[in-house]
Image (cartoon, rainbow, N blue to C red; front, top):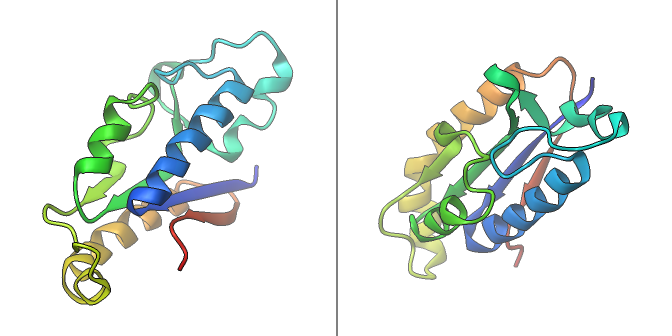
Length: 140
């Protein structure tokens, strides 16, 4: 199978990513808790492209959620598909960058890079044949 690792960063990326996972989950018949609730074998045909099958038949998105502050992560967690994501794949700081690019790039963001790369490595190593990394973020 050819898998895709989805990386969503920042408020914009995580809001887009949360909606993306709602749509993809609906297309594949995955309920908000990660279990298959569909009615067609066609829905399961390519499910491993975006999901990893965990214990108990639960499907977990191959997604890494990154932000410099916990606010957006809390919104995703409390949203309709908040239970879908692997808790270890949330990476966030505490203070944010306050819309200051240099602070986000050199201080706050720099502290998270190693954690993010480690999770990307783990997700990639769990793939049989990694096809792509897909990123959702705010491009300026």
